[in-house]
Amino acid sequence: MLLAMKLKLSWKLVWVGVCAVLFVIVFFFFQGVRNPSWQGLTMGTSYSITIADRPRSAELRAIQSAVESRLEEVNAQMSTWDPDSEISGFNRFKACDAFSVSPEFAAVVQRAVEIASAMDGAFDPTVKPLVDHWGFGPDADPEPVAELLKAVGWKKVRVENNALLKTNPDVQLDLAAIAKGYGVDAVADVIASSGFTNFLVEIGGEIRVSGLNREKHSWRIGVENPQPDGDIFQTLELSSGGMATSGDYRNFRVRTDGTRYSHIIDPATGMPAETDVASVSVISSACMDADAVATGLFVMGAKKSFQWLETHPEFEAFFILHSTNQTFTVRATPGFPEQQ
Ligand code: AMP
Ligand code: MG
Image (cartoon, rainbow, N blue to C red):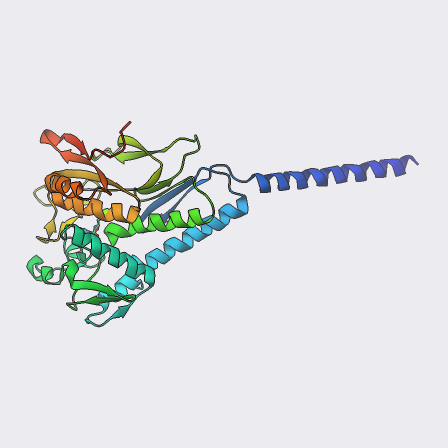
């Protein structure tokens, strides 16, 4: 009798235990992950993503894997460092016939050509031979700059029905100045299509935000200090759109005489751009556009840039300009968000 009661009791305990475990599993499953934030590597740099919400664990895993696949897709289309990418295929294609590409790749080239035209070639997606020549690309190109310039110029490439055509068989594309921004927009689309409205996406410093952060406040974005110690120069608040920065302080080479030259090339001269701009951060609804325009404004220098920006009110820009004795001055368009 006593044994039967004891057995009944221990069965009850087992059931209570099982129910408790099930409750905890179900509770955590439905409760989800609060404000998930994660990092990874892509396009030769790092990315980071924060969602200011509480996706369920399975939902978060699905978003993370969709983001990874999307980034791999963009790389497979636009990385000149991947010999099997679409862009590398086009660059090896030494003919002026139509070269079929994916619709996304065609759309980015089309947008690149439009921005190149609007900026009078200061941003130019055909700079690849020059980028290689100056030692910033995947291939070496020892030919003289004057020779290389014959195959450079945005008018030498056009997009027709998901195909690219060059007017000179030596034309090659480099989308490094726009592809990170495009990748940011593509990742933002993946997250938004999963139903989330509050998030931040960043790839190698190019950013896109939506909605509010976890404190229910606009996202606080930092503009890097162009000094070698590279902390934050300014912070600003943003609740929608993209911001991209181009500068001469991260990716540069040093000549034998100690002077520096940056990875941004002036397509008009074929030489590394030498301007008064240390860094320029551009805000626009699409990060892709901000990315391309930031590179173009860097080439233009402050004076030409402000003239250009007056006729392009869809862009706001913040410049850190070289001043005397290694100091900087700051100049921004009137609509650029207030600095904190
Ligand atoms: P970003 O960091 O966005 O300014 O892009 C710079 C990268 O774009 C360089 O490393 C080159 O691969 C490429 N690039 C350099 N100069 C130009 C230019 N004037 N227009 C377009 N792309 C460029
Ligand atoms: Mg850029």
